[in-house]
Structure formats: C-alpha cells, structure tokens
Length: 89
Image (cartoon, rainbow, N blue to C red; front, top):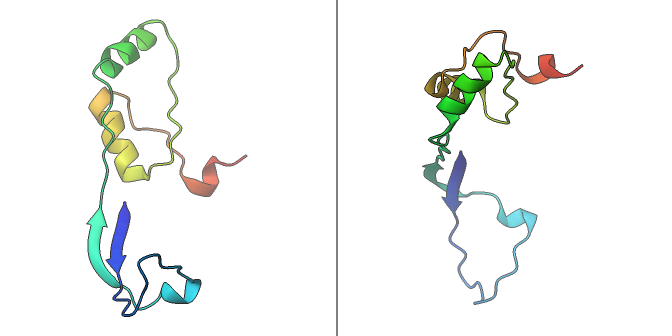
C-alpha cells in the first residue's frame, strides 16, 4: 500500500531539488494497493509437497490479513501463525 500525495510548489524550477521541509502540508490523493497473485502452479505444487509430507512454512513481509487471504487462495491452512515480535527468536 502506497499513499499518494502532492504539494503545489509555485516558483519551482524545471529541475527542482527537494528538501525534508518540502515534505509537509501535502494533499492526499489516495492509496495505491498492489496484489501479487500466486502463480497458477502454486496450488498443485503445494499439494505435491503435502503428499510428500513436507511441512510448508510461509515467511512474508505482508500483514496478517493479506497473508491469510493468500494462504486460503492456495490451500495452506492458516493456523499457528505468529506476527511481528512473536516471530523473532
């Protein structure tokens, strides 16, 4: 998820140089969301791994809502999950 915002900069040159102070009083345009769907072969590959008694673990930078959604899409049970600090040794 990315937030998109802008700021009117009157008098800015065609080759502007921005500073940290310019990153205030922005006007929010909205949010841009990305979804990277699983490959078409993921479900079959995961079924084969399960059939071979391979334990599948998911490690991702996504939040728990997206992770649970993707896991359900590919047939991986969403149980025994740990998030954030609980995932550190």
